[in-house]
Length: 401
Ligand code: GLA
Image (tube, rainbow, N blue to C red; front, side, top):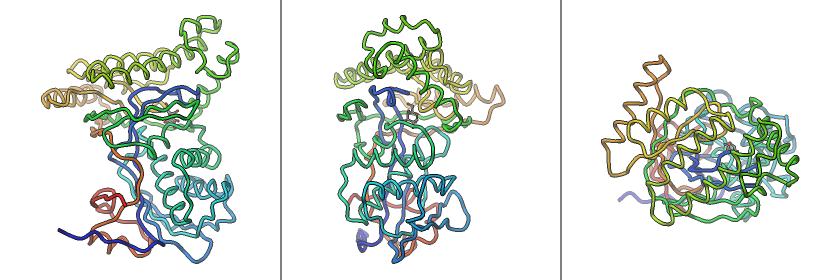
């Protein structure tokens, strides 16, 4: 057997996964419940410490000269585009008092961007883990998730909640993560399954304003209902007190989705996996009709998947593009094949770009990797150029250290 190569402390490869979300959409910033899980797909940060206080950033997915910034020049607005996420993490860590070293960071990822699978959280969390380890700082993962979120909110300017970073940092193989976004309490819910992700390849852009608009509507609904956040509405019938029909629908989605999260947890703990399916499809209807963030490709994919035998399906993530998650019986490969065939045919009939099908397997959260040669030889010692497509995410055997 090939020996594992152990490297020095000033360099290494860190991995953080993307996420799918079983239940609880747009509930996180309403202080509610979410039930995401970490994916096997993720992002690697190959990092070499530098003697100067400079950060250089490269990405295999965004070829071009390294983006370079002095640590002391890091400030919101100083860097835009993809590099704002890793640079924002360095900024947020410094703001929290971490002595971030200069570093060359090379990024590679097999999370499709724009697919609603949190490629940005995977990027943030891989870099957050790398920089804190290199700095010798022991930051609890919940706090690290909050810092990564701060980078996204304040540095990259995306007003997202805490779900994605929590899933990436706290995920556990064979489990979904129940997160109470009010108390911050988490619990691991056993969930061994191979779900199907249907990347509809339609546009997904959280900065496009609709996400912020939903947040504002939820805040206004809470204000009119005289509660701090919609989390405090536990009887969903109370939302009918809202006069504005739009606010009423938004609040109803949040309340019913919180209920669905807790119901899904009970079902999973009781081993009633198949019964989670109809809950997914109900959640999709709520996201489509009450929260109004679905998109035509998602509606067609859900309909085709369920008709072909999926136990249930729904759009996931922020909305207006990205992926559908379908629950298919693990022990019936013929149904899985029927679902992918039906969805592909429904897209082809509408002359839409063919969807992409991916496995969604509840997997381990972010970690440092050790790598087997020859990757270790080609990926090290300096992260000036990104590892190739056969690099860490695709080809190496991840080993927790
Ligand atoms: C995006 C955000 C999350 C969450 C979801 C919707 O993924 O980053 O915080 O709000 O949308 O559930």
